[in-house]
Picture 1 (tube, rainbow, N blue to C red):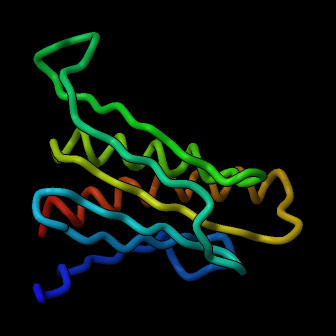
Picture 2 (spheres, rainbow, N blue to C red; picture 1 turned 45 degrees about the vertical axis):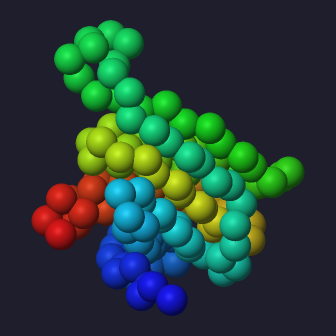
Length: 130
């Protein structure tokens, strides 16, 4: 039996609307779990692969397939982070995301979206340093 892959974790903070990610290298591939809120779960899964950019073939971009459970809204979060990491790290990436807050107001949704963008950058920085 092989050893469990080493993990790396980052978070946007410890407040009510903050989210966290744990990343695991599985050979050359990266698996990321994003959770947050009162009921962490699996709401969406994105699988991304690097490819030459359509706008500039000298640059690396990524494309993703996303699967989302009905009535869940984590698809954009999972896709954005999967594509960011895949393009920048030039590897295949799978992201699962599940965050839930009861009665989230529009301002809260904006904050969670901003935290998602920040989480992607924090995760990329930590993985590059690793």
